[in-house]
Image 1 (cartoon, one colour):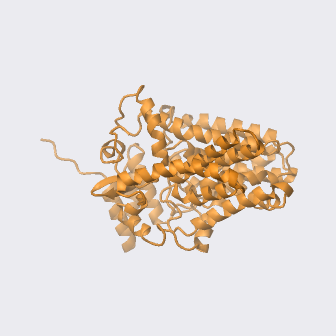
Image 2: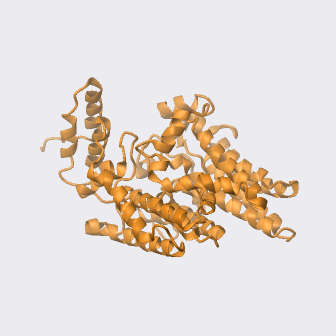
Image 3: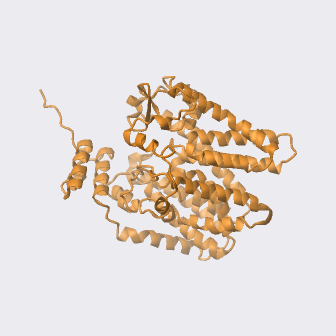
Length: 486
């Protein structure tokens, strides 16, 4: 954006090098779908009227860019979700669980497309519902065009949601609605075709087809851009993997299953229920065909976030009784506790860190490493503000949910007990996980002595594989030799 080019060679010295690159004719470009970056360009240009050119990735201009581009859209999406759930008594509780009991808020304040795309897709669906509610009004066509535009922009921001955008269009169920929706979606598609033509020499060549990193390039040439047949093994890991299993870290989402069943049987609303059920289930099945399901170092199941709001729509239908709401509250509070701890320090974990709130975050916190924020100078006290915001939001949500069995206080106590169990007997990561933990702590924490933990783990290597891992980690993250003084 600063250099007026889509090439990223000039940005690497400022933002840092990485493997997320595509190459075309010897020039490097981002390997990501371009929708979010393209949407950020006018915002960045506006911010440059008030901020100087950035010199590092931590400059204030990038903070405001994330807020105005990603966070604002995510906040609007979350607000519209709660508005759609009202007057269900569990509307606020559902919104609280979705926001604080999943990685949504973390990615909503980061320059990642996952939460942004989830919000765009839901806002598209929300506009379609609004158009249906205003049938016969002269502005219905404009609403449907806007819905198509948002769905299309979501698709060019994360290619895997293209089937969801298509399903949204088909769910209009009438040609007079589909035509304006398709017209709106055509604009982002034209933008993508133009971007690909400029960067990769053809409007029909995606960045994924020009991966520069060997591992990603090999994967992209397998199947359909890395996607193969659905895998039950990958499905099981999505749901129950010890490092980021959906039902382990956000167990409240289990209530979506009976919610969808009831929605699909709910008289006049059953048609919408079936479309949304198809979208959520189909998207999950599609992603189980991707062997890199974990997304590398990541917080939670980031690839599943695009359908989070649609799954949340089904939750209140399973929460009509005080007992179901009470048990849901326990699961939601447990999920929130986990994500509060996960985001209190380094948040990006590999798959060989079982239950990372304890084996990762708590380990870092015990050594004095806290997530950077506006109050970082006061150490652990800087975590009190986000904790207080979370507590207030939880109190409001529990109060609005009406009678709960067990009560909110008992539910909180139960959630704390369940969360404390693994804290009392923390899981022991395998050697690769312990090596990663010590290397990351030494490389990024900025604390002294920084290298001690890595040295302790390196000497534990006992097998040829572990010794190779230790050698590689020491070369990357160990102390660098310095030139002798003249």
